Image (cartoon, rainbow, N blue to C red; front, top):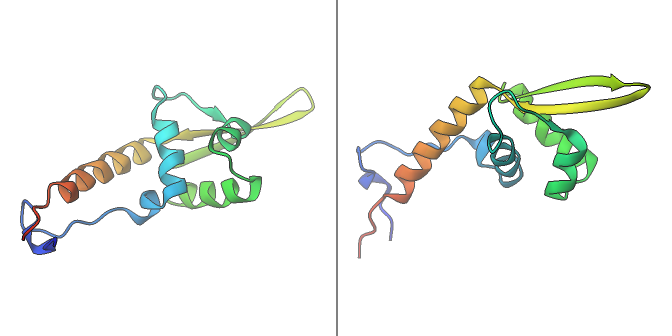
Length: 111
């Protein structure tokens, strides 16, 4: 049984709920696998993660509202293209998320 009061520093472990949701965690992980300032096409993210356009848009909106990702719309000829990239705030939030997750995984179990 895990006792939350036995966190390594004695504090509560708080995982960012925006990032912790499985689909958003996948999106952030995919974007953070890139070099800073690189971006991915919306269609690539959708295909790579096997999401419907509506599902991806909903999750991206949540991440964008938290300032974790930036969405850019451009035209290539007459064709619109949407790009997704992680922001500096998103990188910092993900780093904090990972640190808290590591703390959570470090919680000792009692018998």
